[in-house]
Length: 128
Image (cartoon, rainbow, N blue to C red; front, side, top):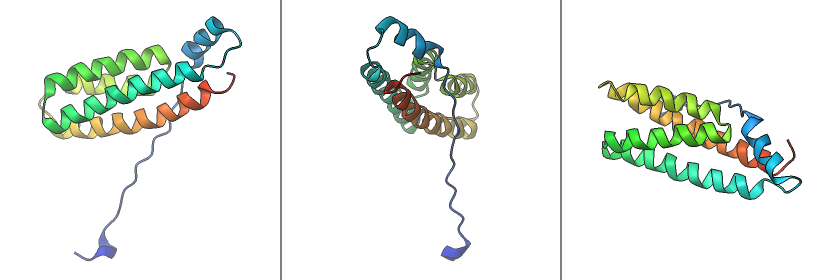
């Protein structure tokens, strides 16, 4: 196969952020910037997503399921509804033996998660 016959796919995700949870934190903090809160949330999500990816790579489906449920909870608390939606799809797929679909949705979860985290940090450093 020649190199010019290879198509490189670079999937991109468009994400939305529910600012309700972010606004709740802003209300609780007053005029203080949300940067530290956003950084903590991002750090926790990065750890969860890394755990999900590592569990998938190791074929540890029980650990993958635990990690996915952690992602769902954290995503819902921080307004990352797209991340929560993809994670719920993955949680449902883990009840099946469709490893092809599980692989695809795991990759999508990581992609959506990374994009959403950048959005959360950006929102955290400015006023909503």
